[in-house]
Image 1 (cartoon, rainbow, N blue to C red):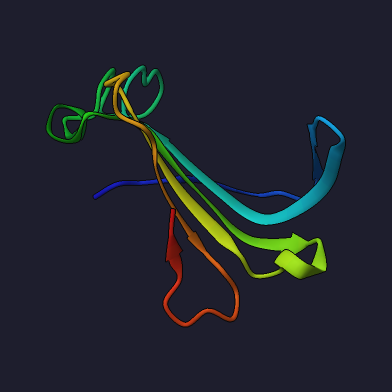
Image 2: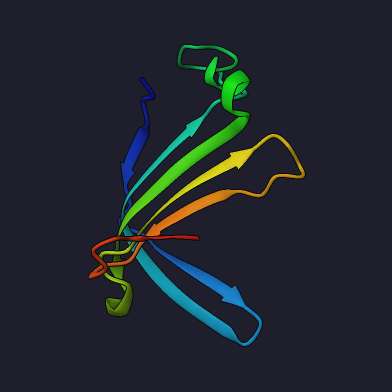
Length: 101
């Protein structure tokens, strides 16, 4: 069983890109490191790392603001293999099937 660390985020995050900036507010964040663990068993590496090659995973849900993104969510896996890209899934509010990226 994978245990997540969860937090309710009440702060706003501003994302800046060239010529574009927006602020978003998120209800919950959960993250889990499989490698480099220092406080919670299993220390220092979760056995799942040897099977999946994942370094960490996190989920963010739901987006609270801006209104046009309200209810959206995201799950992301980062892998140790530098040639393998991240796996990312997002949930788009109002979409019955969700959408994988």
